[in-house]
Length: 271
View 1 (spheres, rainbow, N blue to C red):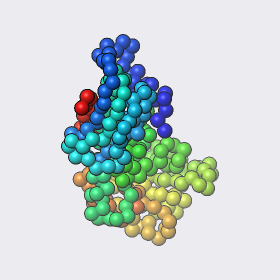
View 2 (cartoon, rainbow, N blue to C red; view 1 turned 180 degrees about the horizontal axis):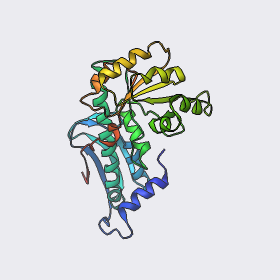
View 3 (tube, rainbow, N blue to C red; view 1 turned 90 degrees about the vertical axis):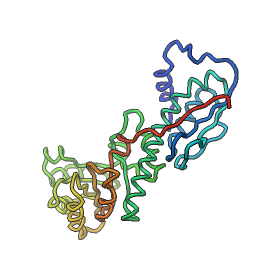
View 4 (tube, helix red, strand yellow; view 1 turned 120 degrees about the horizontal axis):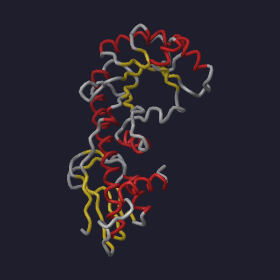
């Protein structure tokens, strides 16, 4: 849900209080064009910016669509001044989101070489104010959003365990959650994986383990039916296939959002 308040903040940041640059008369058309191959995302947000400015979107590709150099992603029509005012914000949003979708698709494709079932998920390592755009981009690339915010799932992390102990932390949060809320427990050693499952974890997050350690932990969790194994921590495009081969159910990657380069997009008017 892109709100008017969000769009106003984005535009205010770029336009400022005295925009002379875009004082261009008349009506025109504009096209958002890919300059390199990738997977599109963020077009809803880009379109919302133009709509807020009274610019009509004539054609829009869907998020998740693969594109190559020269492919047109979005075409708009309206007052030249408003199209030019919205241009940079729209391109920045779509380029950033498309970069995330492209990186996610690459991670999914590499994981699929080893497993047809493993889920590639994002994390909460998102840009403040842009989480909705970035999480949708992950989905456009074939990934999973993971939890959208702190209310969607309880994650028992290292700091919780440091304060209350592994079993104590699990008991503490289990008493405070609904039956519909899952408990994801982070462990840093193979030995702690079955401990977490035994104590009531729904998901055991194997943090910063090597593929070999991850495989051993997954094997130890097999006797706990229904408990999912999640690998996380420093997993890259170069190593994601190695983790997919371990048998984990989920691979969560912060790099999908915090390290994805923007897809190179261009905006052209008057054509």
